[in-house]
Structure formats: C-alpha cells, structure tokens
Image (cartoon, rainbow, N blue to C red):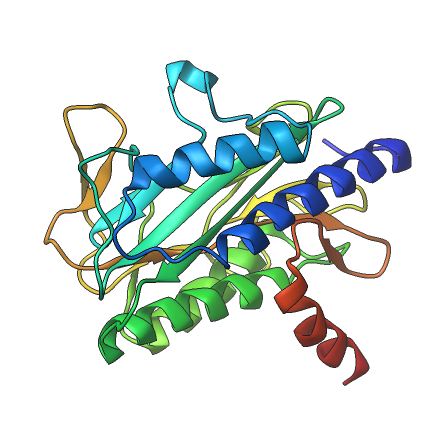
Length: 261
C-alpha cells in the first residue's frame, strides 16, 4: 500500500502532466462546446502533446477519456455531442493520465460563464472541503480524520455529502486500497504511513445526498435534481505531511503561503 521513492517520483511525474491538462482547459472558452468536444480536446492533448495515456479510456469498458458531470450530475457523466455547455452551468471534468506505468487522477468543477451566487457558493465550499481534507493528511493521522474534517465543513454550510463514491489508493492501478471516505469520525480507521498515495474527491450536493444512476450504467445524478460539485487531487503521505501530486500552477502560491504561515 506504500510506494518506494522511485515509484513516488514516477507518480509525481504523472501528476504534473495531469495538472497541465487542467491548465490547458483553463484557457478554453466552454460556452457552446459539447462535453464530447472537450473529451476530444483532452485526448489529443494527453496523447499528442504529453505523450501519455488517458487511463480512463477502456477502464471497466468505459469509452471516453474523461467524465463530464454537468449541474445535477454527481459523477461519471458520459461525454456527448448533444450535451452542450451553456452560460450558468457548472461542470466537473474528472481526468486520469498514465505515464511510465503510473496513474494520476484529478478533477475540477468549472463555472461556465455567469453562474448564479448559490451555485458559486457550492463550488467554493466543495473546493474548500477538498483542501480541508488534504490538510489532515500526515503520518500517524487516520483515514477517519479526513472524512470527518470534510463532513464537518460541508454540514456547516448546509450541504450533504454523497456517500456512495469515495477516494481510493492509486498507483499502477487506477483503484487500489485504501478507500477514502468523505465522512466519518476522527481517530478511526487505518493509520496513514509515509509513502501511501490516494485520491481525495468529495462530492457535495445542495440538496439531499441521495443519488441514482441512469440507464447508461455510468451517469450518476442527484435524486432531487439539486446541483452537485466535486474536486479531486492525488496526494502522497510524506515524512512531514502531504504532497499534492496533481497540484496546478494556480494553486502553488496558495500552498506556499500556507506553509509559510
């Protein structure tokens, strides 16, 4: 369940490459583009520019490079030419990348055009919840500490947490042990050790936490039709704390300021 220094270096390489995919997407005007357009764009960038493999394509029979989850879609949304992004939408792109045998996994919720304040608040609180979970990671902490911190932040702001899906260990395989729940009790669960690598990926709903899956077997929606947001990073437990392997350039200054404080 732990990685060697050599394996961690390869995972960090995959993480940096995946971060650059989101940095590329940050420059793309999303209004009017279909989620299939984005899937095609990301595949070309990963394969042609980064000389890497989109790890989600073919995984469990899935036919696309990314998941595109719009508005009330919680996760695993399937790209489609008819799913056109419109002003006011929120959309999560969940992307994986494999390089030299190791996989990185990350997601980001984008606000498309003029998003109303309630939706913006959901996106912001979900992003905060991700980082609150990340900041609990260190040797000697327990898995329950991560979930408890995320759950407390979500409930403080009146949001529910989806319980059917969780973070996961990652390395040569997309899904490895342990599972990382986004709810729980402090001081419970497995103790974290240096060299463990896993994802943290909370999904927060404006309404109830109940979800349902469409007939395509992939697309998961909120049962009450409320908005849902998600963010995800791949992280490694270090000797002194945590390293975010999929950290994007826009986040580096935030992390630096936090460490300085």
